[in-house]
Image 1 (cartoon, rainbow, N blue to C red):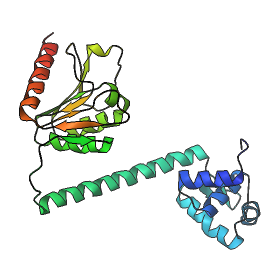
Image 2 (cartoon, helix red, strand yellow; image 1 turned 180 degrees about the horizontal axis):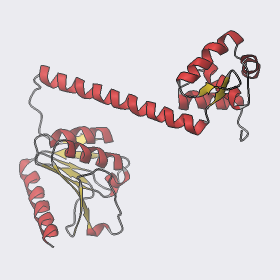
Image 3 (tube, rainbow, N blue to C red; image 1 turned 45 degrees about the horizontal axis):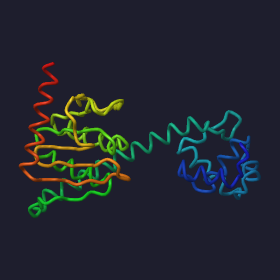
Image 4 (cartoon, rainbow, N blue to C red; image 1 turned 120 degrees about the horizontal axis):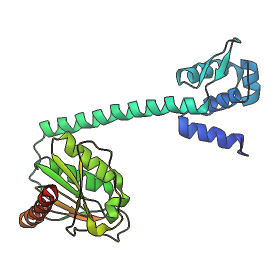
Length: 249
């Protein structure tokens, strides 16, 4: 097993497949050829009375199946991984729905105070996502410039663009010709990639309400959200003209 200790493999299974120590040890015993409860107990160190309970748990988790020889055999690790990934994705979807339901309930039950409009300084990708998505709600469109900072944090672009589509907004990914060899791809359907001759700020997300600037040369995602109406209008008008010219060409 590539020189890894039994303890390392048990720890790996606990972290990756979310198994208890006993479950991991019995699964390893199956992989090594244990063909009976007694043999599995001897190979794993798990007390024999516990082996019967543990093997049924492994079966429920898709890691073991009944054998034609009367006990159980292992499910190959890669096949078990596919089942575990499916379970993780289902749990994630369920949790995401609960988060959305909680957010909608809070917005119905509590009238928030008027939002501040002075610049807000961002220091993490999650702040960028939260504020950009919030700005989308009152805007008919979102423009995203993919350079430097955001190019290194594609998840921000994917998340904001996906939410824009979900809200029925026009979503454009703008790439300046001055960016040279930048080759950005996005998997969100309904989002157009536009390459403009217009020199654009290093990285930004902008809507009709606010601009989120991410200067180049920073470590991580850092920036500032600007809600100055005149500045927003000036930048948005400039981009709109450039996009119109692009589409006409």
